[in-house]
Length: 382
Image 1 (cartoon, one colour):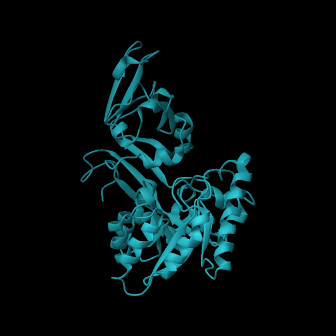
Image 2: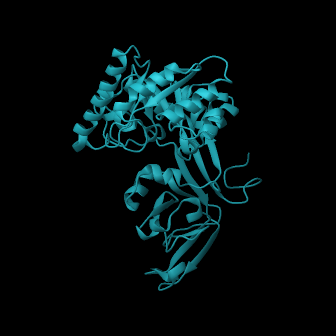
Image 3: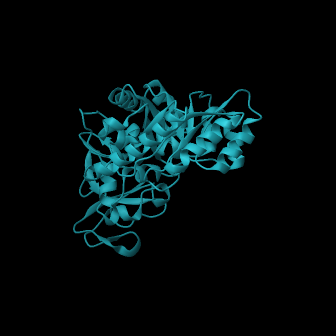
């Protein structure tokens, strides 16, 4: 393949580099931190924008033993790529979806009687028992069975001829907020109470899991049998780790090459709305990435910067749909020069959490927002 952004196959000089060695490193670090709990690598939303198949392979190489997706289709894509590791579907599939999940050897999550019935029906076509996990809503209030309903639900699973109860789990909404530790501990206690009730009825959960990245890093008691790590797998800690540092490496860089250069006099205004005015004569570089690619208009308004020739340079004016402009001052810039929007160039670096801080959002949204028009280029050997 040609050098990124140049030559055959690069009609548009913009790309995202995904460092699979960083993914494998992060998986290994998280596995070690959570041990003896297993690591489940969350690769939903196309691996948080990194490319689900490449991320899954790298995470497994780094020590993950499970994968998790939001949609059945996402799990099917992993199977079609030849990945045979256990895959947990994090939300209860539709009746049609659960048939596809069973046919593809995925592990569905269930939390309603209707879901159990649909899974049982789909399991009639399977060879052998179909493992399912039951989710309990201990306080997130998004999806999941009420704790009081869990025993009846698990009994229904075990009564179904083709199903096997293989796990019980919940999800933490505030594990990343130290001032809400008591709430997370209360959720963990609710899950433990449900597990105890099931055990007393002869239905002990074979696997118990609760922790997202924040739970895994900040709540050692919540690691249980498995931790489900998303954002930390991609190099961003949602909270300060407790019990020792965990080195994480951001895995995605967003880059482009300068497509046009012009020198403009002081006083000229740039882009839609003419909101950016040059205080002095400056070199303006056009970069072929815009809000249709995930570089939001709000980033320019929040004084967002990019890296050119190893220096931070401001985005000049409103980000347009397909392009943005950069104020390079008196610097020497040429068409084809590399521009880094997320990543490292020389001694400087801009990461997704910097964007998040400027935009009053989270790194998850920044990464997932990088659009499909941006090709992903894998670097590393994991």
